[in-house]
Image 1 (cartoon, rainbow, N blue to C red):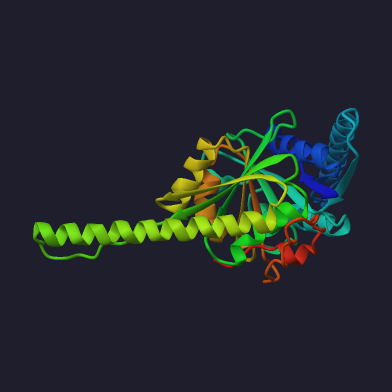
Image 2: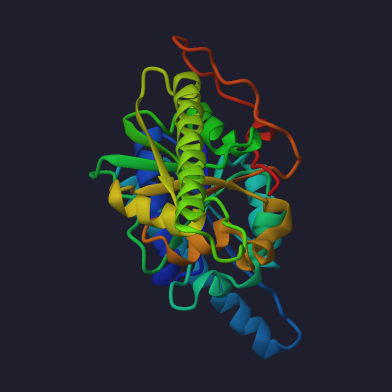
Length: 323
């Protein structure tokens, strides 16, 4: 990871993302690019005067933040861009070859009140790199706290995009990675009243199916861990339940400081908000969530074989799976 882009608007909320970004930048020796967009509306002398004042205030704010971060030993660049915030962020991400965009979201009413409103939707829909979201109510990443990363996996090949991104960008270095597979309980069909013997047989079959699913899930996570995380600190965890609830619950249980998961970025926040696992996790998780998306529809490239150093992957190879 070489470049982390952080959109700012001068508010404490936006700076929640900056706290997480500076933690990653410090550990990865990446540079920070601070971006602030100032819309122009010079239709009268009064508005022109107000516009210049807004530009001066934004420039002063970015310069102050840059000095503060440089004082911590970080490499920082700031861009003050005119016009539409979403287009400014996307332009800056492309121009600076950003590996990650770090943004903040409100916590009171969930992701609907995202920083910059619909801007977050546009960034997820059209951006070409993962997005790190930090809710106002969550705990930002802290460089002094050992990093524990929870990676939910759903059993599909494309869901491994998040894991491929972690290893490809070396975010798994000096971190504990927990691979999570949530096995949904078998559905018991509606049936007439059974005899005690028949009911016992039915529930025995359900238990057997659940145990078999757990065994397959454990083998699956072991295979992924050996493939992607050889030489890293990692563990597997298989639980029976429902995905969004268990992801948040297990993140708390293992003391995760970050959840990394794949989601359908091409559909934007609207897809996240209504019914998706990622949307429910975003609304409930008390820690930042890193979304790896598959805008180009590519699968992750083959992971490094055990015993070799993972190479930096092409960004298009680490997009998230379709759900």
